[in-house]
Every structure is written in C-alpha cells, then in structure tokens.
Amino acid sequence: MNETTVGFLGLGNIGGGVVRLLREMGGELEKRESVKYSIKKILVRDIYKKRSIDVPKNILTTNAEDIIGDPEITLVVEALGGDMPAAEYIKQALMAGKSVVTANKLALATHWRELLATADEYGSKLYFEAGVCGAIPIIRTVTDSLQANRIDRLYGIINGTTNYILSQMSGKGVSYADALYEAQQMGIAEPDPTADVEGGDAACKLAILSTLAFHSLVPLDDIYSRGITTITPLDIEYGKELGYTLKLLATSKREGGIVCSRVHPTFVPQTHPLASVSGSYNAVYLFGHACGEMMLFGRGAGDYPTASAVVSDMIAAARGEAAPQYRMTSESTITPNWESRYFIRLKALDKPGVLGTIAGILGKHKVSIASMRQNPTGETHAPLLFVTHLARELDVRAALAEIGEDIATIENVIYVEDV
Ligand code: HSE
Image (cartoon, rainbow, N blue to C red; front, side, top):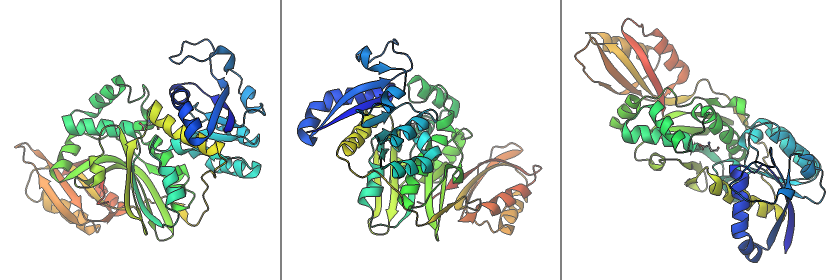
C-alpha cells in the first residue's frame, strides 16, 4: 500500500469536494489502486468558520508554513484559487521537493514557466488535470495518449458559465443580462462574473492546453480574447437562420510553424458536434494527423467533477507517475490578421444604392460576401447581415472603417468557423 501524507491549501468548494470524494472513495481506492491518503493539515482563512464539511479543528491551520515546511507532507493539494498567494505557495512546495496537485488555471497560466522550471530544478512534480475542463481528462489525453500526433487544430468550449448563458439566450431568446442573472441565481455564474464572461478564464485554460497540445509555449499575453458581453439575442437569432450556433470558442491553430490561439464568440455550424454542447458542459474538439478528429465532452466545473480530476492527479502523484511537461518545437504568436469567415451585422439606410456601396467597399478590401440578408422593417434603416468567405481580419477592419455612418452603423462582428 502506497501511503501518502497530504496537506491541503484551501477548503472551499474544490478543497471540500476533494475531501468528501476521498472520504467516499478512500476504501475503494485503497483496494483498487493501492493508494491511501492521510490529510495532516489544511490551510484555511478562518479556523472557526461554519463549514458544510466536518473536519477536526486540530488539522486546520492559518499558516501555510505548517504545510510547506512539514517534511512529512509529501503531497500538497492547492485549492485556494486566484493568482497570489497560490502561485507562491505552489512554488515553495515544489522547492521543498513536494508533489503539487492544483486546479488553479490562473496561477498556472500566469506563472507557468516559473513553476515548471522550479519543478524541474527541484525534481518535484506539478499535476494540473483539473485546471482545464474539470473532469474531462484533456491534459492526459494530449500528453499521454496523443504523443504520436501532430495536432493542427483545437477548438474548445472550455468555460461552462458562458456556455450556459449563450445556451439560455439561444433557447429562450433572453438578453445577455437576464441569462447572466439567472446563471448567478443558480450558482453557475460567480457574483463577479468578469473572468468568465470577458473570456479570461477560457484564455488561461487555452494557454495551458495549447502549450501542451502544440509543444509550443503559448503565453497568456499571446491570446487575443473577447468575451460575450456584447452579444445580443438578435445576433444569435440571425446566426440560427443561417445555420449557425454561437459559442465562446477557444481556438488554437498551427499555421506553418506558428501557433495562433484565441478566445472569442464564434459561430459554428449547427451540424457540428460542438454546436450540441449546451448548458454548462465543456468540450474539446481536436484534429491530430494520426488520430483524426476527436471530441471530449463533460463537466468542466463543480466540486465533484473537479475533485474527480484532482484525485486522479493525487493517485498519479502517489505512484510517482510523470507530470505533464512540454518540450518546445514550435512558436506561438498573436495574430492580428486572423483568417476567418465573418458575420457582420449592420443597421443600414434602406435606400437605393446603399447595399451596392457597402458590397463595393467590402470587395475593395478583398472581403468576399458568401451570403447576405436584409430584413425589411418599413423604417428608414433596416437590419443587414453579411457572412463573408474566408477573409483577413485587417481587411475586414479596414473595410468596416470605411463604411460611413451616413449609410450604416456596424452593430456587431462575429467570427464564423467552419471547424
Ligand atoms: N468558472 C469556470 C467555468 C469554471 O464557468 O467554466 C472554473 O474554471
């Protein structure tokens, strides 16, 4: 039997979930996996706070050093969340030669290089399956199962909150604000939803995932990200009419030797498997040159789904299994000149020649129209919609800048991926 003494940093939703899951499954894991865990200390902010989980007070501490400085503790589970002090504690634990398991995508994505270098230098191990898409084993899939592949494209719905909001907007025709409010009432969205709805959470996950999948350091700063706050029910409705479903899509593509990674609202064809991923579910769809297409689907958040991945990392750590590593073989870049199809929604003056003028401007900038729709309203201005063929972002921007407000206002521009 492999017995491991563990210290926990944090006993909130995730930490509490891990403790509960270990209590529930501990006996079975001993028999099945020959691993046994003894929780020696748990770092909390307030020892006397009322908790939904019952733990003996004598194992609670408010001093991280009681865990990091204790040589008996060989495995640290970091479940504090946030950037600091979590990243600093992870680093200190690695420097003390301990294995660390974390679900903290922000600390990882912002201190990635430093933390992996520390693990390397001190011969310690850092596991983070739970950091990307909760229960979905995507980190192991790209690092342990698809090594023989050259992954060229990867598309993820990797934020459950925004997927829930967009699904509600699409299904019920409600506004962004109403869908967000409902998600907050249900405990799906945080009281401060910024990290989710502005795309930051998805960008952190994409930085980690793309670095491993493409063997290329993808710094968070290289990821262009735009959230869902400007999406209206009208965008979603028009997209539907044209056969598309709107997702906050995290995309990484290899173009030549360069990897480009982005997070933004994107229309995907209704017939694509990603379009059917609704509610707070996550999915990652990728293309490897040997494996072909693959999609992993599941729960990306929540105490038990996240704990499922954390405990699996705890088993890997107890057995001394290798932790994920990346070896750089390609470079990452920001691509201001992204090639995509574009959905352009305008409010245009309903007068002879206006459509021709706008089409002319797009054509002048090498933006070719694949389809268009005008919904007559009987008013002076009418909604006008274009979906382009593949076009370069800088060309689209230049064209739109040239359309004068006297003939049309640009209401929204959304990427379209044929995936
Ligand atoms: N808030 C995230 C989501 C889960 O909605 O997917 C944690 O990253």
